[in-house]
Length: 395
Ligand SMILES: *Cc1c(COP(=O)(O)O)cnc(C)c1O
Image 1 (tube, rainbow, N blue to C red):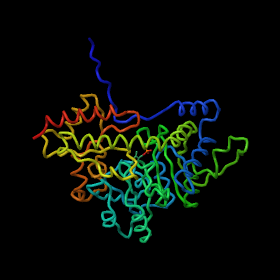
Image 2 (image 1 turned 60 degrees about the horizontal axis):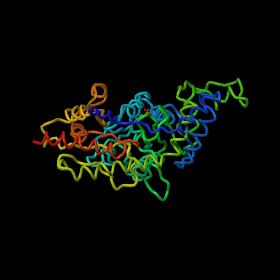
Image 3 (image 1 turned 135 degrees about the vertical axis):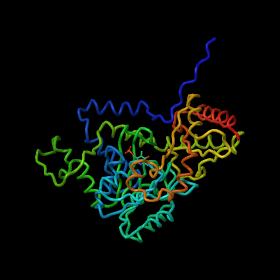
Image 4 (image 1 turned 180 degrees about the vertical axis):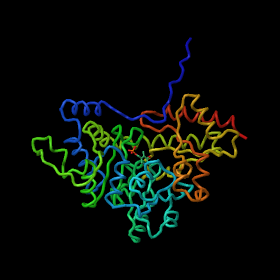
């Protein structure tokens, strides 16, 4: 008899059906591959979905954040507040503008930056706050928006984790639509995907115009139309722009994923709940703390971030990751706080002790696989492996 070796359970895997495949094939057959009618349709569908006046499709959330800071006129005189608990992109875009990223600590419960921490970092140079809805758990909205508006500081939402998080069910108030601009990510591991891609949303016409201009070489309006029947060969370069446009192949994927967003969310929520229930009832319940927001309908569940009670374990978080990997389970860490990275330490961090929560939580976090399609059996396998690993490492 042959015992089947369990297949590797990856940390993330996109949910792609025949509908996405058909949509991409249609674009390939159409003869129009780059920014064109499908990208326009995706922008329109997205802005309708979240209720923003404008949506500009780009090739990443990083691009969307950069365009938002450009449109705000952020410059070398300015400071932009960014949580230390985030991905590289949230801070590097500030440096693209030659401004100073000012890192702030997070709160332990949600791993989000609380208003109090943001407030303490505000100076006369603060131009904007890049707010991250970590793991898909929205920040205190609209309180943060109102708080910053009173100080004339722009709120830019890094909504890379939080689509389709709705802060208020009645109002269709999506996280990402509270600030001057919001940036969504369609990277392969995110809640909906176009492979690589992003969307900038705003209600501000001037910001939308500027972002659209700069997203395609600073070339005058609707540069992409120049190769269509309706287009003209003539264009003007109005500024030194960027090459941030989305392809129609990506947009075709995005349109289908957008239609499936609620279905994908409810599966993520269901799997997250299964994790929490199983872990709470497991023999290692005292060795972990479960993520906050389980009963919060606004959570987008991009990530399921477990905290290990490392003081009660003989194994470090890193060794738990290795042992899970040996059992065929992929995990990740979100995030290695920015203030611990060599670039930030060397360049921007003046006091490395200023982030006690993020520094401590970093030693404990582990992101478990969470993706539609992993199924109940996938969750149960991860829980079983965790129970085994942690039980044998109990102090
Ligand atoms: C993924 C991510 C981004 C960047 O998204 P891209 O589309 O890959 O540019 C930005 N911020 C956070 C918090 C992310 O997790």
